[in-house]
Length: 564
Image (tube, rainbow, N blue to C red; front, side, top):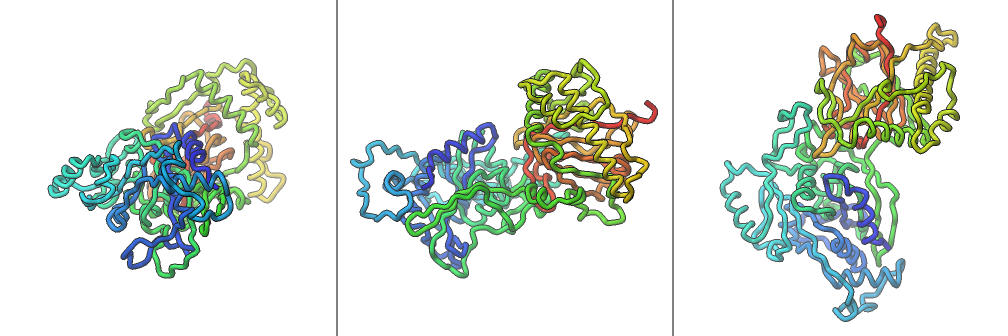
């Protein structure tokens, strides 16, 4: 059986540094994927007694429980904990993890559960138009409910009066109408993201729950539009999913998940039609039988990165030219992406070493704005500022030498210089190999060509959150300071890089930079396109799928300008 206490405790620890609570999506469905009947006249009873006990145990261990306005109106739920069901769950967990327990196996009363502590979660309702009734059971129970709405108080004085009436009933009402998150570098409002009065911004709502109400764990129960909204946001906003599957065929019913339900206000900005896709993959699923029901517990996974790595046979599979006409696309040799360039063990040691070095140079605080306004939420340093004690010979450095150099807990500067030289030499080899393939000749004039690299630039971007965004705005690397070749090694996290023509930004495309990859740009991509790591998390999209970005370190190498 699922150890709910252990699960919630462990997952809360994993997300404690984020500006949102732990999010667990849970619901019951029929075997054909329905959570309700089409007519929605009355709630469809799906969970059996045993699986329902799991639901109440989970409620007992989460700080808050969330439903939508439709569920609150149609089902009129209490959203409280039933002590009898919690006791049943504990009894079943202790005595029989696999077999169905008879309803008569345990007599639930105060005498046989003396150590049972009941903690009712705070009800949370997403109710844009403030439909909730003052007579609703979750209001009358007075478990400090929170209602999120999104209406214009100037245009809706009747809703203002209703808000005041709810507050007299000890309901916290949060109007998100004017809560517009800003991920732009210049802190100006984003005209592409007008505040909607018809939906709640879920990332903003989660931020408010944790920062204002100190909610560290949230159980999301439904209905269908709420479930779809959260699942479509993926791993960035959902940590765990628990699905109860009942042995029932509904036929024409309400589906638990639909990729078409969420609206653009569920994301901070941009066109979310690019983000929602029909497929939500569950990672590390665990199956348990609770009486007649099957319960699935898993993580949510929406990044395409693993499938992309598995399928990639050439660099072009990490580049999405679908939004740009073929005649406007750069040549295939002007942008290369090499996955798995850095071995896993070298990657981990390199990230640790560079994190230590950047912390020593810049401290623990990230810089908010670069002097040219392009970068936000970063640390950076040139390798020349690291004080390397010795130059490394131009002779090829093997991967074994690199591994040996990184064995020390804190590698010295000479060891790091060896790593940098290995990156440079390996990049030269990749460029040479690609040029040979394109020319279909092993005697390419560019084969084994030495490149005069400038001292590498190390850039760390913090993991973007709703409160602390980070990224690199559109830019072209300084044409007077650097040459025609730019390469980067990506460490710590997957990322999406977007390219747009300088003269016509509408002509754009994106590339997926998987963790541990090498990317290389030259020619028109170097001179005629801006490139960026989007500051707005909603723009981290590759081939219609949202890519979650964490803390990222890149090692950037550029060749010298011909005049230097």
